[in-house]
Length: 107
Image (tube, rainbow, N blue to C red; front, top):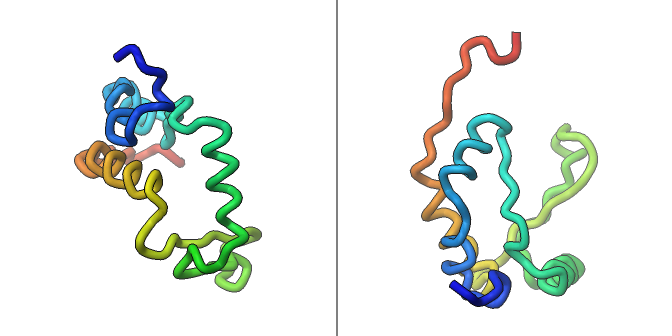
């Protein structure tokens, strides 16, 4: 594709990544970075949603549950358009990934 990744629909943005590499990173590191999945403006727009409680169905303050500092929120339905598209496209790729057992990983 010739279009910059950040102008593509969510499913097309996700499809351009090397999913073998992503799976290998998840297996080895427990995390993988999908560089430039979102534009800086999209990141700012999404971060800006955090202050609007009407966009969220649940708010968890971690200290109340003994999980340390911080908080997180679950988006209410319907999700914002880009979130919904990315959620569907990413889940399709991530659901088949099976965890690798490491019997002696933390000894």
